[in-house]
Amino acid sequence: MTLSALRPSAPDDVPPPRPPSVERLLADPAAAGPIGTYGRQAVTQAVRAVLKEIRDGGAAMAGSENLLARVEARLADENRPSLRPVFNLTGTVLHTNLGRALLPPEAAQAVAAVMTGASNLEFDLATGERGERDDHVAALVCRLTGAEAALVVNNNAAAVLLVLNALAQRREVIVSRGELVEIGGSFRVPDVMARAGCRLREVGTTNRTHLRDFEEAIGPRTGLVMKVHPSNYAIHGFTAEADEAALGRLCTQRGVPFAIDLGSGNLIDVSAYGLPPEPTVRAALDHCDLVTFSGDKLLGAVQCGIVAGRRDLIARIRKNPLKRALRVDKMTYAALEATLRLYLHPETLHERLPTLRLLTRTAEAITAQAERLHPAVAERLGETVRVAVEPCTSQIGSGALPVETLPSACLALHPPKTLGKRGEGAWLKHLAAAFRALPVPVVGRIGDGALRLDLRTLEDESGFLAALDAWRGVSDPA
Ligand SMILES: *Cc1c(COP(=O)(O)O)cnc(C)c1O
Image 1: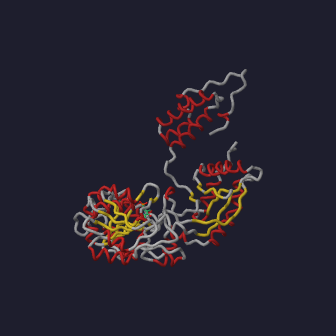
Image 2: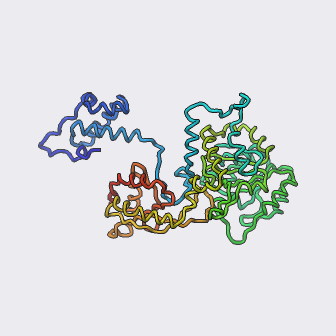
């Protein structure tokens, strides 16, 4: 936007120039560019809107050149995609609001390869007959988890809903009282059970549930025993839960299926990479019949939910009409298959799988990066923002390992010393808003008197500095 068009009106004794007509502006040779890019109709509408703004606002008329610049700025703004890249420097690696896992380039290439042309999504190339879309990933999931069979739906919430409905509609599902949790605001285990048409049978107490509680509850009305991994909370102190292996044996004896909702679908032992231990799908399947997990949490692929386990149960679940309603697109299979293939080469996984690569960065490496970037960032932000390199803690996010944090480093952006405590809070909010308003928005976290940009998740340093080149300062909070 040009500033001259926004200046206050000329002094009263000089009559303001009359705005040019819409036709004259459109006929201006400089209008040819925008018309070529956006089309005559859109440019005409934008010209009308800008002229109206000027009439309504009483702003001084600018030359047609300036008017067309305003028209172009307006069109560029209107045509900016709604969904676009941002820099996630919040310190939460798997940030649900910022799109969770980053896909490896192999996945992006696989998606690109199938998205603009036909593919063998449900077509068996060997026989020429109809194929099964889950076949593109089922064998890989089985190989990586030891499951007999697997299927894919829209997300893990859908996977849980489908398993419950397919195996226990109008029957009882036995769950420990300590696991009747809410995950991410809108996924509450008791609500999902009700929607799936199951009757919830709670056993035990909030802090302690024993094997005998399950023993007493299993009966002719039982459809399923379910265990929910405590993904976003932890109960400490005087606690007990039924041993998973013993519970599995009990369910087998009684002929009742046993499912575990793992949440984060860990395919490998992350403690081997120095991360806090988290159960793997393979270990869970040693004791239960079915596991449900997310594709875009620790697994590091695309949004989807995977059900893996016993062949006969997966076959029953696949026949349920909800499977059709919850099925995923070819792009999901392409991204998931390509990501799962990286797991076949565990030695390079921590370099090639972005989620693992970011989670395994050391505080030393991140601090060194922060110190390297510090001068360039401070220079771009100017004198009002005091930039410092400070330690901070990142978290995995998406409910994985909720109580564990990872040591990291941030660029801490402090307010000018002249502001009082009150003024600081408002200033920090304005600072955060200015970062979000950049051409590529930067999202940080306000805490301990500063806006903190955790660099654990910053890989594109030149892109980040380029985004800061558009820095125009913090608007005055007053
Ligand atoms: C995250 C999570 C879910 C929901 O998974 P989405 O893929 O987000 O739908 C369900 N159960 C548990 C235990 C989870 O951690």
